[in-house]
Image (cartoon, rainbow, N blue to C red; front, side, top):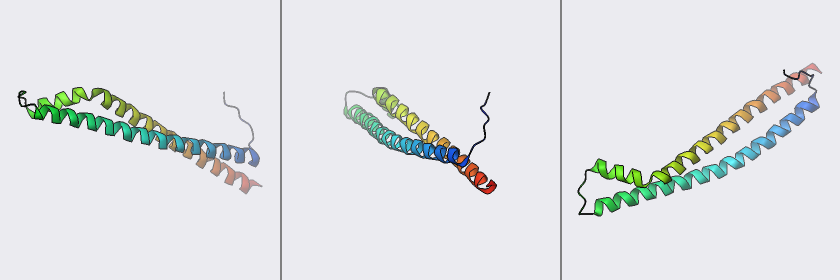
Length: 118
């Protein structure tokens, strides 16, 4: 069951400050995750391109473009997995920031309402 108590302006102010701190922390985390995602994307693209070029340069291996691409995909599978996981973490952090912002907006609304009541 939800704890239903009367909020006073001080409680709301502290809640707003806590949410501001949480948003700042999540923003810093998002920046780090964005950097990690960019690095993992670069690693994946480099591995894929290197493999694709090596396969294209190998004159003894006759294969179609699709087969070369499939082999490059297989060779870069680990890098691709890391890239996709880091992208998912970055997206989760972005969603957390949006959630904190929504809660912050709700607290601001409560603060304005309490201010109008006094």
